[in-house]
Image 1 (cartoon, rainbow, N blue to C red):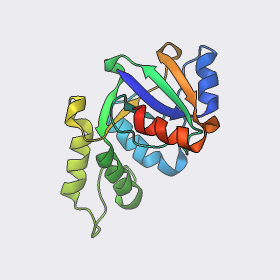
Image 2 (image 1 turned 90 degrees about the horizontal axis):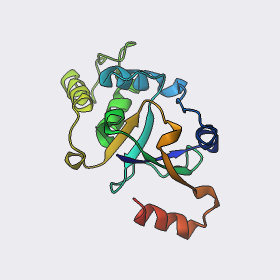
Image 3 (image 1 turned 45 degrees about the vertical axis):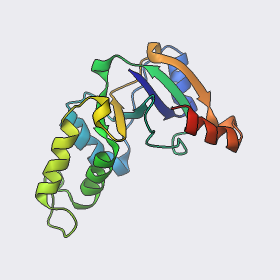
Image 4 (image 1 turned 120 degrees about the horizontal axis):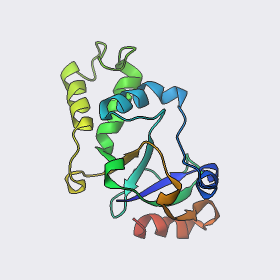
Length: 168
């Protein structure tokens, strides 16, 4: 599968040195990430997020340093989620979930049933065509998966806009 992901220059250097990149925990989002890792059965400290080539991306790369990596990843190393479902799940976990991120505390915004449905939707793997905005999730990035990269920080604004528009 061809995966696009925005990463920092440090991640690119790790890959260029022939080393595997493993994402590190984000303390603010740790509960949501640990919940996702648990739901998908991942073996990592934190997931790596990307999107499928030819599909709408989930981010513009501003947060991660704006190096757009193109990866060729074996299908059995890619998990897919619906981006909006992940966003709702993350919101629930960060605002309403119990300490172990599996149960929802009473609130007026999400019911326990809605939270359970989000968990089921995240776990259920489907064909890429069955997602509106498929989000690719990886446990790591191996150096041999790197096909190419674009340093978006050095692009003029118009070129960056065209890249997002045409270079899915």
